[in-house]
Amino acid sequence: MKLMVIGSGGREHAVIRKLKESPQVETIYALPGNGGIAADAVCVDIGAKDIDGAVRFAKENAIDFAVVTPDDPLVLGMVDALEGAGVPCFGPDKKAAIIEGSKVFSKNLMKKYGIPTASYEVFDDAEKALEYVKTAPLPTVVKADGLALGKGVLIAQTREEAIEAVKSIMEDKKFGASGDQIVVEEFLTGPEVSVLAFTDGVTVKPMVSSMDHKRAHDNDTGLNTGGMGTVAPNPYYTKDVAGVCMETIFKPTIAAMAAEGRPFKGCLYFGLMLTPDGPKVIEYNCRFGDPETQVVLPLMESDLLEAMTACRNGTLDKTDVRFSDKHACCVIMASNGYPESYEKGYEISYDAGIKAQVYVAGAKLEDGKLLTNGGRVLGVTAVAENLPEAIKAAYADVEKVHFGNAFYRHDIGGLALKALEN
Ligand code: AMP
Ligand code: GLY
Image (cartoon, rainbow, N blue to C red):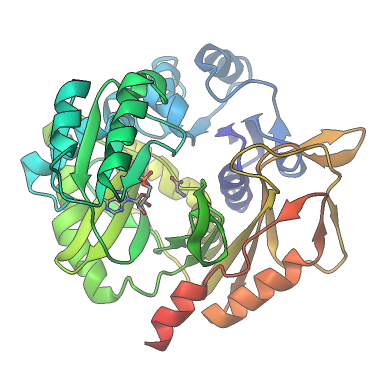
């Protein structure tokens, strides 16, 4: 089969590497991919949001199956356009992708169907929102309704910060039209767990759980980022917790989307918090997480392409989805300054003997050299029998990767290790 994968991050590189293991795959095109992905796929200079370009390319090249990975093209309706042109896709259509595209939609969905989440109020009027946060309990969480590059969530510790958060989103339009509406919600506490799940709109099959490390620097200091590293499985996500999540969150969400006439097919990402009152949904994403995917897919034992086509065709109940009992750790190597400004254009080199998977995110090829070209440059993922060994192996290989201005966190997996000790 000829496949095309939309996107250009470490997540897409992990998806492509895993798809290559499938005996049915002949060629994979990446739109646009990146300089590192070029080692595993044919990169095509068509942007991830270019819906017309993707449809044209798919038809001209007789693509058999398309994997639409990032949030933007999904929310914009790339799957609708491709399927409309006769190209089968993995990923939700526009109607279903709204579960990530609008926080107001997802909060109202959870309320309507009794799915546990933080209590909240919705505002489309800045004055009313400001009035409300003057008396809301602190800390308080202010979220822009729409996509905001993962930055649309502001946690206000003080009254002043809450007022500032509302003003920046609704009046100064920090996230553009994404801030026309906001959700103000209760601050929850507890360990966070990411669960990615395959679903065909009826059946849901969760993948192995994972733990992201969102802050830029060690000990969870610094700014929020897209994610600086992950481990899988997440030790807080015990069998008991998984059972509760399945019955109170996963199945009810899939059923709710179907009941709303928006059946979700693809990978649904459940961002969960294990609160003292039980697991609650912090957010839904309509796609694979990054860097969660960089630890989850290396642990997948069954065939990824089969799972993806089953999600599309409604046959997930009959499809084998299996993960190993091993552990994975991914350390993201970034450009110093990320998530704000950073320099790029430094050559990336590897010492011999790297055993980990290196998934490239922000790099380009120039005259045969791989140069840094983004904030998150690459992820180094090691798999081992237990978590301490996976962490050790990942960091051992991080030492073998070199580029100018590199930085990474030194404590990925630390919280998970502590949880295992208790
Ligand atoms: P999101 O962009 O929705 O993933 O939110 C970013 C981060 O903000 C989450 O990973 C949580 O750590 C935190 N967060 C979001 N909502 C809440 C909440 N209601 N209570 C506490 N923390 C939250
Ligand atoms: N790592 C969080 C996300 O992909 O949204």
